[in-house]
Length: 189
Image (cartoon, rainbow, N blue to C red; front, side, top):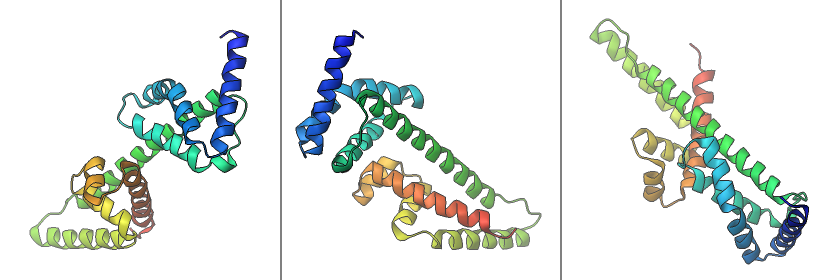
């Protein structure tokens, strides 16, 4: 990029940030218009698909707006936005990995390696008791999202069912899996 173009871009971005701090929603819209495609490419490049790209971008710009009065963006707004997107994407990936671990643990709890029906019945009762106890440790909203997910619903279906956003479903699912994992790992063998 030519130095003059870089200076013009930085001046434009700085002016948009000032306007955002002054509650100018159109400035946020303009910033999103300028950076949406490059940020989407960054997110998709890390995720390997566009499954969560829209959600990540929405979360980044909503977060900017929510923190507008305390924004401390460096001179390089583009770099700042790229870092925000990268960090959000890495959080999504960590969350997905955590969910897979919990699903594996739940699957392991439900496996039956017993010899006869009596032992199987006792094992089933123990597993169900353990799982119910773990689920009881989770607050209502996250527990409801986890139950719907374990019932086979996608995040979008859960969001529709509960009348919340997919981002809220993700947040509640994160909380539920974190609590469930903590409870199951803290149990006595």
